[in-house]
Every structure is written in C-alpha cells, then in structure tokens.
Image (cartoon, rainbow, N blue to C red; front, top):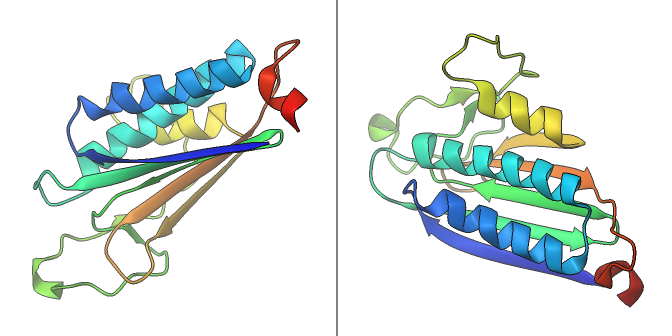
Length: 162
C-alpha cells in the first residue's frame, strides 16, 4: 500500500507546523516508529522554514510539500518559487533583471555549533538517508527532497496492508 499527499501552503511561518502535524498524523496512523516520525518531522520543518524564508522575493507566494510513503520508504519534497540554487541546472527566468541571485547548491552541511543560521540543511542531511537539491524545471524555484527508510511499530497498519 502507498500513501501520498500534497499541500500548497502560503509562505508564512504558521504554515510550517501545519505541514509537520499532517506528516506526523499520517505516519502515526500508518504505524511508523516514533523515532522515525520525529526525525522526518524535524527535517520537514527545516525544509519548510527554508522555503518560507528563502523561497521567493518577499511576496507571500505559495510553496508545496509532497509526501510519498511507498513500502518502507518515505520521500518528502518541498518546492518553492524562489531563485533556486546556483550551480544546479537553472530554470529559465521570467524576468532576468528582476530575479534575485540564486543560492549556491548546498555542499554537505557542517554547521558549527555557534552558527545562528545554516543548521537547517545540516539537520535535514543528518536526520534522513538521502537528500537532493535541484532547481525546478521550466520555472523559477528550488526543490529539496529527502528519503528515509521507515521502521514500523509492531502491528502497524500500512505494512500489513501490502
């Protein structure tokens, strides 16, 4: 059995806990191990916070969260409409003069303990099994996606339905 859902959220701080609660509710109902639920909820919160902070030019545009649970894997994608990443395949800009400079493609993050910023990507990489950064195809924006192998509580609903 597979589960997937997608949310279109406004780039507002209040959207982050909404996405996190929906993810937690889905995984808890399916029977995912609580430690895995926690890791993915923190990673999702960080990806959403990045989309809210960096995902556009100040306008309250939308961003999208998509979650796929298929077998023993959960994949989460957070897509924004910001400038994207420098060094990744670039989507053609709508208006080159008005576009902010894209951010560099993140290197494997190693945020120092005293850092005020930059911990989000480090946490996503530390809490998940595989992370990908890319630019959207054919339009401005970035996609951060990450996978995690799931563990199940005994008697969990989803693995038994397969």
